[in-house]
Image (cartoon, rainbow over all chains, first blue to last red; front, side):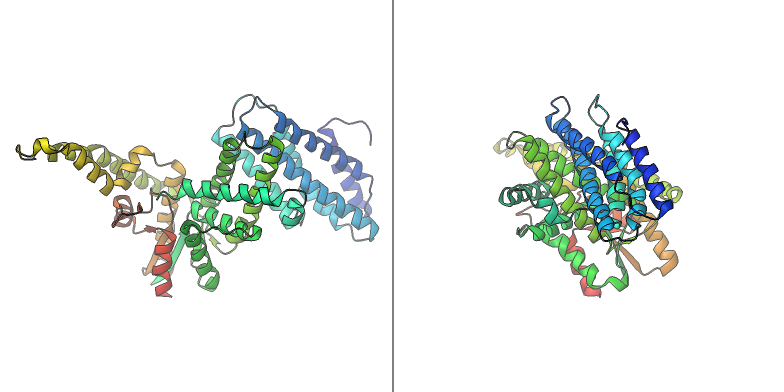
Length: 176
Length: 261
């Protein structure tokens, strides 16, 4: 991969996907682009984890977006490898062409520095962009399964926090 | 009678959290979850009857509510866990509920709405809430009037104003809630969409259509409190009187609709 900047890498990936579609076969050199973008998303996850200037809940939302994009790319990477190994039809190329624009749109949001707290409209805009990305990823089976998402976490602790989340929801919406 | 149930965002969110908890093997015992899930089960079992409906506004609101609750939790738990673990846990929790919510929404009929016609209903909905708020503002004065009417010989025996005010406040909790918590514009739009839908159903499916709105929001459904033998339902009754829509808790709607099946 030629040296490209953070946003150009998406263009480079689009070009390769187009070429693959024309030729009707998978070219694994695109993994360089995927790895580069995954690395960017990972760095953004860390950026929002460590960010002390932004409000915690805003940092979380942007982290959540970056993490989801990274997960989808991981799944897509595996699908490309499988397609090459098993000499499958290049359906994965068309699938990738569908999801890439939404990944790029989310990238542009999470990579922007946050100058002030997110207002309700902006929050909704981000949530909607993520929803669009996850909708397409879901229809193309690019979303990780529950088991894949939870494979390296402490389930006991996670369950406890989930229960607390359920209690907060109940307290917010069920005054008794 | 043909029943239709419009699911409000809080009911969709609570059912998705309940289903996610089942995935995790956690038991959520609170009635809040059970009743939302119970109503969804009724819809699933009677899918061909097309009872459950939703609009895009409610779907978006459900997604916003879910995000809002999770974001609130990250803020509340910020000091308890290291940020990386905290963010990861809540990101997974959000995704788990999101997947369940997608699944639940497939059982509801997404109704398209004509925004220009909804806008006409919105004017009436806004007017109703304004009038109810005004009523709540002026209502406080009755406690003062009642206090003035207390016979002089017992006047000093108690703080009558406080007694009357407390009693009034309890009985009119749903009304006074409008002063405490302003009705959000999205809620007004949801009610206007419900009005539009009921009008449409009556035109297309006949006059014997009943539209329920299943909600736990006090701007729609009656206020219930533990230990109260009554419900405060001034707003709910006004919605039914003006627009013919029956707003109630999921368990009450379940009872009514189940009987009619």
